[in-house]
Image (spheres, rainbow, N blue to C red):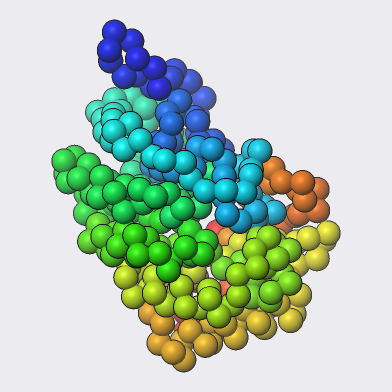
Length: 295
């Protein structure tokens, strides 16, 4: 973002966005960035609360450069408000869509709290949700636009995070709760996290009670091998337990790696075959859960 004569302007860039480019600085702003989302099926307005590239996990498929362990910095709510309002004006009334977005994707699908780390680590998380709600109201956006939180769910026990999630439910909100692996050694390998499956279960139950929640799972090969049979069975058993306990999850967002990892393990990672992914989807569907698949 630049200021010319006191007027905020977006950086000029004639390149078209694509589903393989999720650069957080493509608009030249601190917090707000556009994404052509294959999962959303249009333009997703990203809110990056971790411009310091800090996260409490280190997923080996992460596309964040120079990722470090840590939490979000203090959020300048005034700057976020200015950026979000200006960018919405550009999308709705300006020529950003014509210049940067393929014709088939020129529709705002959601505002997504994602970015370069865990968004719920921001101390201002609840205030950020309130701010987004006020902006949505002022712009009179269509009712079908969602507010999406993409989270690893590790901080759900915090009261401010729960308060923010509850406010999201009043804004057509959805939580996309990351669960990549069910076995402890596999979570350590893939997410570099020691969080227990019991805690994941408890946090997921809390999240789903506050706001519509989907499980989000990324599957891929490591050194040419897809998730093992024992991992797949542990994952399916985790889902069975959720169903038995009537945890109200909406379903599973199942996807592969579409963009190169920027972590040291990148050379070891590759896409699973379409047949493996489809078979995995069918196993989940057999439990009675909805599955959205993005290879």
